[in-house]
Image (tube, rainbow over all chains, first blue to last red; front, side, top):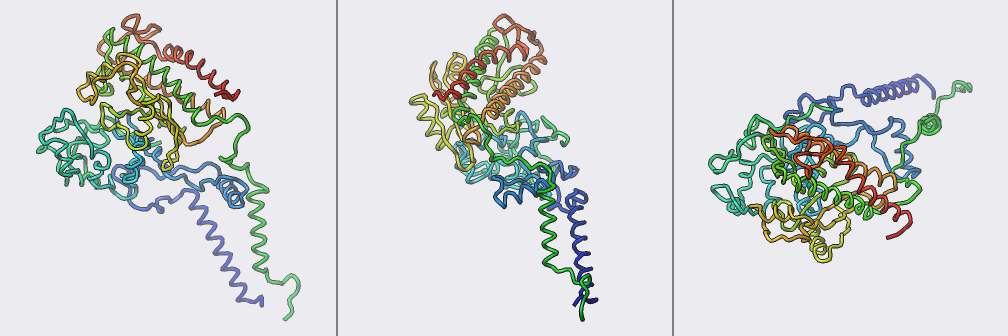
Length: 224
Length: 282
């Protein structure tokens, strides 16, 4: 029966539909994007904006919808990204690309790292720098072991040899002397007593100031 | 109670039908042009990734020879320096040949084209560059018969081409034999010192993509040479930069002069290879 009760149901239905449509439009417009944050920004990223990393996918929302429906109906061979592109190394390198990086991520896609990639996906920035964690480095202090277990130095400058440190599995000591991306200006110690203690390195990982040196070879670029 | 025709409730079924019609009109009937379908192959000649790597390697061989002989070799005789630490602010030097390639590789990674380039060996100065696993197996084959190896790596979804890196001029072997960290000090001319590895994610490409990839490589080679010139301008005794080469004295060619010589030579080889592709010759 099309009575008062039924009429109220339809009013509720339309109100709900309009509210959902308005919220979807606001959500897609980019306003209030900070509500979508998964967690606090990492150290040094406090002032960057969402769309500095989350780039819009090609095409309008309508084109993307059209392509996705077309893909589901097998009218096209490839799917498209809806909304925003997944964040990739390229988004990080816009600000952090440096000519002197001894461990650039791209190097780890070389075939010889096939076994290493099964242990650590060093070809992705996000393996060690997961965003929205309020930290700086989201890995442990042991990761050097994945590549440097067979390190041989013909002229070892250290008081306790690198070979000995590796044999004793003192992996956190690597970062006590070496800055992974090599961007801090400082003298690498030749004595193990002068190396940075692991606790200091961990504090740096958590977002505290650098224990290496405040002087950097290259400052990050200022966003896109 | 009897309802008049106009008083009939709006059925849910009809509601959804109208919604579907509206969606179809919105998405297809009145839609903007569709996004390009990446899988749609353009008509025309396809070039295999193996052939693409051969083209890239030809260009790479020509520029390495030019850099090693005309800039590093002749430049050293005029007092120019080349060092593995050339990027350091207080070092007045240019990149050694292997580092020129590494600089190019770094520049390529900044390009949106997913082309990667590496140089490695089974006896590198820096042990971190030593081949391992499958790449080492392929390198042993290259050392044996000097024939390039082509394969596919599923975990990174890349087609791979490995080419022998042969000691063609004396500065290569002298530097490696004299280096304090070199694990091998008896290199001779024409030895296979290492291998250049190219990676690309497609099994084949069309002619437009081939030319785009080649032009990106040339653009990046130009960038690397230009960055060396910028460094050279800051030397305490900067060389004169113009149309003369180090073989003529304490000079360096401008980026345009350097690239012009390279492109004149490499374009002949590249064009010949492309003609062979069109004529289906091996």
